[in-house]
Picture 1 (tube, rainbow, N blue to C red):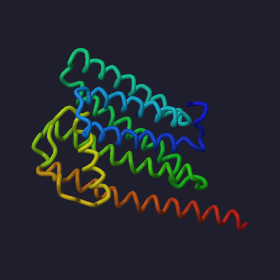
Picture 2 (spheres, rainbow, N blue to C red):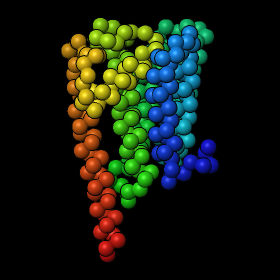
Picture 3 (cartoon, rainbow, N blue to C red):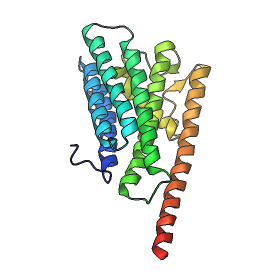
Picture 4 (spheres, rainbow, N blue to C red):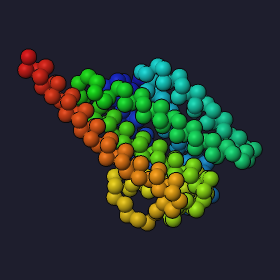
Length: 223
């Protein structure tokens, strides 16, 4: 995989991995199996690996993200083998930090930098998916400490609740607001409307970046 992934196609692989993570989490809700949490961990680990290989060109963040994955795997083993009580919460925290680091790395590579190409356009989609995933993880953390913070979301193992949290996150990010899941506590409400603001703001930033890069390409061709 590492030989095939280059700076011209790395965001295609990364975006595909994120989409597969979302699809697998929703599939686990349809196919009720006893080891759904373990399956979620394996799919998440696979997503981490693809993200790492795709971002190996950013050496600074690459080393930091590798260390996060190593700690995450150790926590997963502690959770599965020794039933470490707080391992699940710490895994969600590390997932958030990993996706945040991935978000920053991609953002530096595609927004307002260089000419625009298909890889960067797909990278902007990856940024949007990462935004939704990060907020979904925040909702899971809120549930850990405030189980009644949302109507329609129950506190369970993160692998069992992740699909519903991701659904609510992207519905909020796109400002659809179906209403089947709603924040109840004041803190949860603040986090939710901040995501809606971030979704609108992100679209404005991406459009400005793509239009600016396209205009720069056109000006360079005219000279």
